[in-house]
Image 1 (cartoon, rainbow, N blue to C red):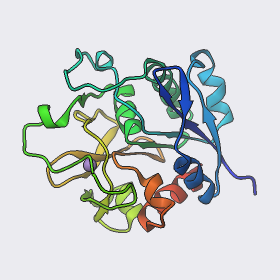
Image 2 (image 1 turned 90 degrees about the horizontal axis):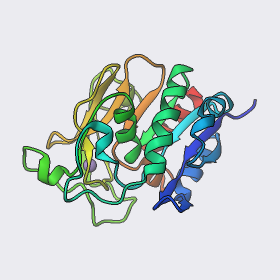
Image 3 (image 1 turned 90 degrees about the vertical axis):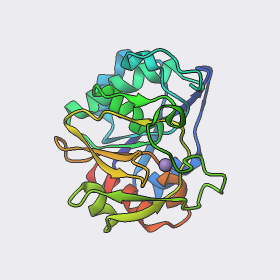
Image 4 (image 1 turned 30 degrees about the vertical axis):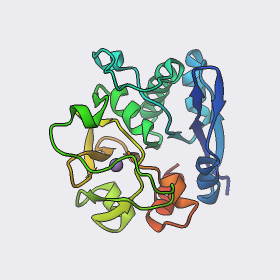
Length: 233
Ligand SMILES: [Mn+2]
């Protein structure tokens, strides 16, 4: 049987250098998909690209231009990538139109939410109204730092085979208002949204943590996130 082709967005430093952690690539390969790395600058061709790939993996990276959701830059906003901010929403909309699966990781969950009309905290520590736990772990990337509670009956709970599990965490931003047809399917104990999914598509899942680092280190929930994603493709 042919393996599905997974388009994997890349991290672009200051819009001048494409880089990507091999964990994303390795996690897709181990889940029996064929990863193809997607660059910036192909805005004109997103519709053709969407027909060639069987699924889209939106990877992590820097921060997101807040003017995309009607805000000006907060003082704690980090490095943004205008190239990614412009091509990824276009790609997301094309892939959603064709009902193909999307797995969105870290920056990916945020750009997915923005592409569908949602917004986000530019800096959770300054803007979130409650006291927060540590979301930028000092521990190694394979360490499980905090709990996520998954919504009963959600795609996430079905993949995790549980409604509570632990994840790693490397973010100072997070999604805020989540628009229809997306809904919140995972939260941390402090209320920070850690997972969203679409109620209107077969497989659209966004997670705020980094399952690619955990999957290649043998974490079962993370491995299932990738295998279920690739199987859906
Ligand atoms: Mn977190």
